[in-house]
Length: 297
Image (cartoon, rainbow, N blue to C red; front, side, top):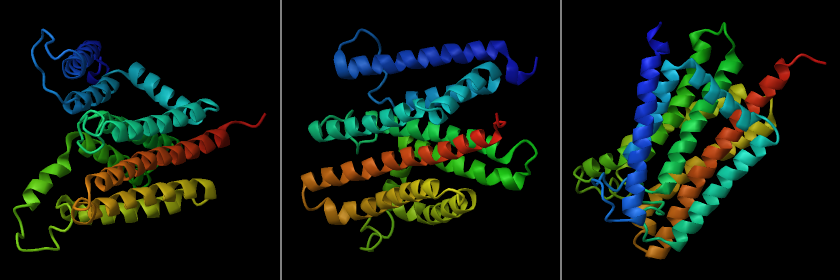
């Protein structure tokens, strides 16, 4: 039996997934419901066990083709079949509205905070970006076919990598480390510290990614003005997220807490909605490819 089809490994990953879910449940119980819950403290953040959960799902999909194909078929179904896709994307938008409402209603609650990167909003964003990356890979396989060269496959893999990386960065707060590093650099520079310092480290990559995505969308989706509009609106929302992030530190934060909270709500809302629109666009392309490949009756 090949390594990638090991039943023992599949069982191990099943058990690890179950254990990880129990860890997350214990954290929720201790932090949200029962502080004196009679089990060892496992921290107060869901981010790390949630990221571990996603990694375990990927690894289980790698060792079990049955599990992998079942989950891929489910994602393909809920994103391309009518009316299920309408329900699914409506659910995502309703979740975003709910998170925004709770952020403004309970701003001091870190689990409802859209800024602390340790609450439900971060987990939702990470999960949505993870699903988006999977949708891109599913669409890619249908788009380029079985005989495609690496030059045709690579752009799709890079697009999926962008979404996966942003999801990991959001969940683990990788960019926050660059804030701490940046605060120790160019101490006399007003310009450098005018924005959150992590933006300077990410700026070259951001420019390359924006140009790459715009070019990719123009090449792949020029046949459909509807998909093109969806993709570029999503990209514009994400660019606005960066603009708002740039204005936050020195323009909005000093004004008042209420303005800061409003900015954070708009910024995080743009990020979540942008990811949803990207998923709608890619799934629409996948849906078109599926309909095109069906034999005419």
